[in-house]
Image (tube, rainbow, N blue to C red; front, side, top):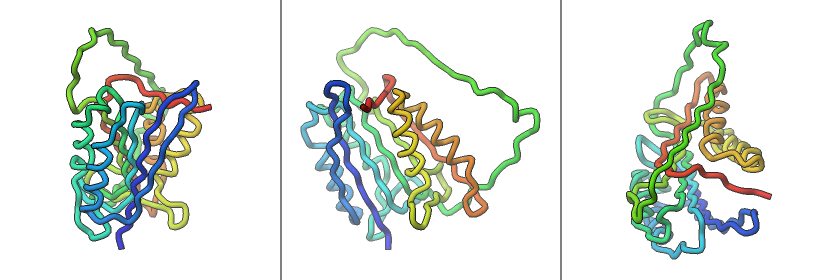
Length: 218
């Protein structure tokens, strides 16, 4: 059967320490998933600095599945929070472990002259006047275990390859005050370097964050 876990995380900063309030909802049908999202999007988040939702399930292109096998478009899981006034200007993060199709991704050989290409660091500073309102789709980040059309993999005992690496990189990266996009880039690199049952997996992150996001830890 299809299994699903939703880990809803909100946090506030206090004296440089990150405090998390976590709620877990297991084995939800598609309609229950939508109801949970509606419930949290209508909560009062004014005392919180961010919202995080982690979804672990099966999926297909652009959707995740409930335990009843019915799909819920990922956009239907994120958009209710675009209407949440107490999360305006605050990061809204979604991490999703689910296949996005049935294809198995093949590896590609790298050209010999590319192997020594040095890693570049890109930084950009922006200085813009503050606006009293922002687009409602601003400040979202969605990290998915795989690109569209392809399968994602999980270890039979340890679980999701994507989430295992995500947690590992968050633990080390947040300690060193790395921003979330740098952390996700490491996750992309490490997961994509693995050979999984002879195939590859390429995680994907899309975002509309308007500020650099660093999650502080002790």
